[in-house]
Image (tube, rainbow over all chains, first blue to last red; front, side, top):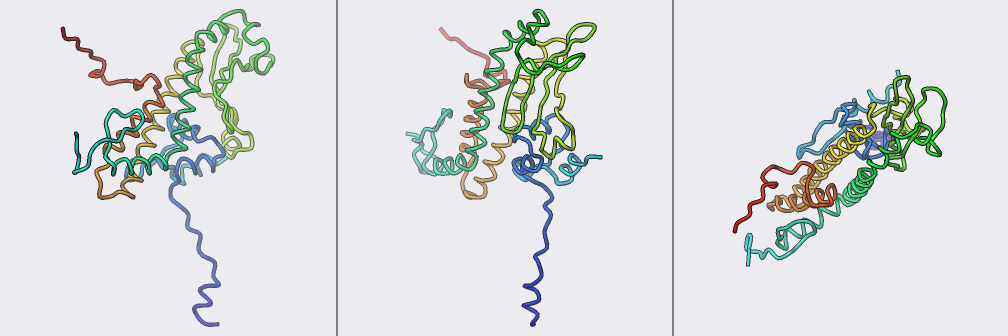
Length: 69
Length: 212
């Protein structure tokens, strides 16, 4: 087996994203799209902003919210 | 005939007083298509909120009358100091906003709860339902609710505008897209305030000058 074949056989490393769109966050939380905006408005979820000001939800925030302990 | 960058400004779009050039119109159509679902959702949410707003006086009357009448045939009947559902304010596929009340020794207490899908990750982690607002005055509570929802819709509107700017910057980087953004922003404002007024219009727009 040559080197190229070995590289191809390895599974692609899963890249964890740092932030998600509102729609993606809603899907992950299992809530409505507008519920995510309500959580932001009430300060329960702290968003970050993309270059043009679009709201994004940091992965760490989602994990914090879903932490049951 | 107004021209901009050599192009005639002749294209009208909904809820925007200005006219766009052919290039701007092309960008407008691309941008609107990219946020079509959000625009539709915004319009539906605003419409539902307006319906709630119209019914506040009626609900206030119901909630301030005899206790038994308030809860008769509406929502869940529980005993003790449990909350009773008076009205469903908003219902979506994944959550409900509920106007509730409960009897206390010193009177009644009112609240707005958000009830999530019990199988959702959020509900499992954070508990369900979630208390949003509470007051001993039903009317004030509902007014606060409407105001809070309007602010939320403003946040959605800003986010749609940002998404539009992102799409336009990506697909039409060489163009001045400011009027396209304004046109879509005007469309969002119209969704939120069907009467054509923003939630808090700037003072300048309230000044009306009459000349004889």
